[in-house]
Length: 309
Image (cartoon, rainbow, N blue to C red; front, top):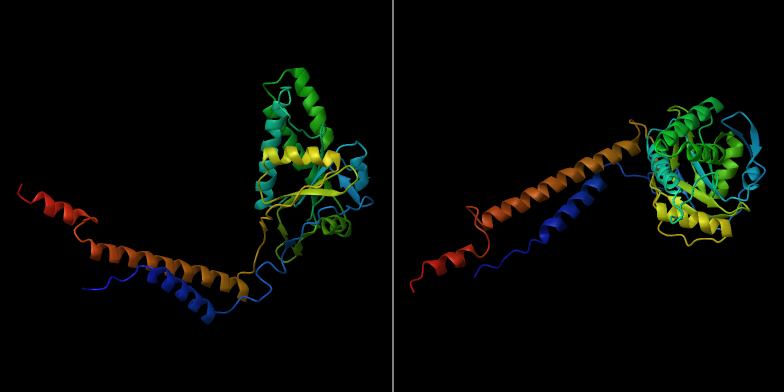
């Protein structure tokens, strides 16, 4: 009797093939692909510097500590305004979530949080060349989107929401050294590539208590309503939140001619090739074992049907 071959050899062979291909092509350095590009090391409980100077979209300068004088917690979001990658996804997710929150704020039964009433959103540019004019344009774009979302509200409610959001969302720029003081305190590490005019950075935001203490983080490009509500309420109380899984997502650009980039491309290509070969082998073995579109058990069923009663 012929011994059946276990199909487990196929994924094992694929894994060995990928490992072998990686060893023969140029290796990636041990510090990782993103090691010198960006990193995120959350500092729960750390104190943000309050004496850092930032310039708002209206051209007025403020110390960072002034944002806490309202008695509201702060959601601190470092991005760069011209980023069309994860920064766009991050701000788009946050804005859509806040639009729903402002619409729900008219219902007393809903525990919504809106900027200017429950917290302040401070967005700071990490790009050393971005200007106040760009910050002003970004805030105007944001306010326009909010006002469109309020079209079904009464004029009185529209005016009230407009006042809240206008006073509670701050698009800012600052000197590179000042901005870095804020991001370093947050554990948000990025690098500016002047040759590409691009900032390599992680995707993260920090929830700050009214004292300036970091109490929670939002990592990745998505803002969940339940999480934001909870973190805002707990930040108001000054209570730190347990740090869950940190999802390191960010924007980066690699030089197309660099050894590291070529390595990534080669590994990706060979892995895709190994996957295709593995699937082809599985299909070939299946067709060989069950020719003519037969399925397991068909032969037994057929033999039983042909037996005489």
